[in-house]
Image (tube, rainbow, N blue to C red; front, top):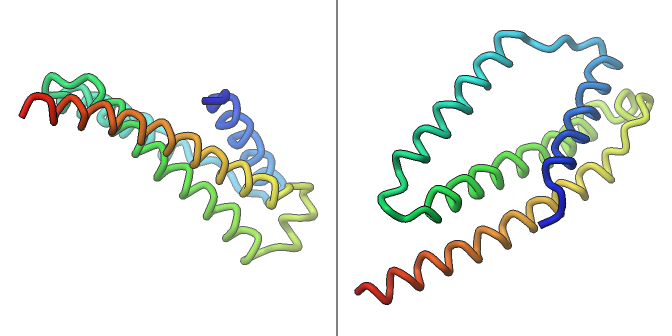
Length: 126
């Protein structure tokens, strides 16, 4: 899998730049709530392993897939709702949406690999 962390950081910078250009402030409360939700999610995944370490990884990848799809839809929605304002900021919505689609495919490919390992091991135990 390509450097997804770099992609995520780049997308965050693009979104922050867009928010500044549109005069939208970041909510400290939302950031704090996201931090708490992230920690709770990590704990839940650790507790849900049930002796299968790849299960937590699979769940994490599926959660990441949902987030990436949400990001892709955000770029598409912004382009549909306020295309002129978005383009004036220099945001390349088409490139960002395409990058999100590529990220989604990479994460899903990895999730399928992990799922095959889990279910192959499970079928040998039955």
